[in-house]
Image (cartoon, rainbow, N blue to C red):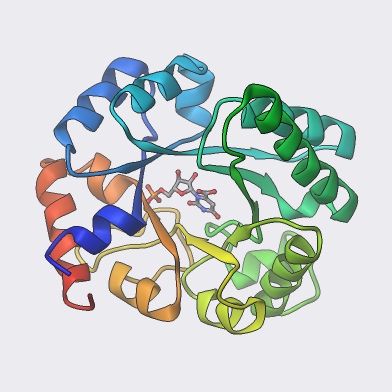
Length: 243
Ligand SMILES: O=C(O)c1cc(=O)[nH]c(=O)n1[C@@H]1O[C@H](COP(=O)(O)O)[C@@H](O)[C@H]1O
């Protein structure tokens, strides 16, 4: 595989920017990137027109709205979001089993109503900004962090979801337990030259991929770099070493 091919297939760039203009400028600079994530900041600012912009440029879309509510409400949200024809959609595993099942069914219904391919629905196991210490002392969860992430992933799998979002530090264990057909998407990935910022359970892109991630989500190391194309190319080079 040539330099860049692995990154083009399996790295999702998080467009955490405040407005459409900034997003378009980044997407047009990063012309080799094929998969973008639209999250809470950008979607709240622009609404669905940002998705049309990405589709008109033939980009794949991860719509990361991290739904977290009662079963009826998350089902409605997933039904609506699935109509946009996006590739990936997120919900928090902490919504619980009933909500996860309702969301899975609703995403299928919404996509069918709109005549589009259903999104892969993936659950957040435990945000990558939470450390083992915060899990125990702030969230008062009495399980070890890897065990907690595993339990959330298993509940998502049993509820019919397509996969989960997890930190690169848990991906090997989840791959082993959940099998090859379960999507594992890893944010909190940091090249050695980038600032970890608020991410607490990081690995490098190559380490995360070797550990079994299907997709890596990388934002600020690229989007806030003085030269985003150079940052992207450096990540492509790191990954080409393992391709
Ligand atoms: O769902 C996500 O994508 C997500 C889950 C998670 O546990 N941690 C996490 O960082 N993310 C997202 O992944 C992206 C990471 O961005 P950077 O930290 O800038 O690389 C952000 O858009 C987060 O919203």
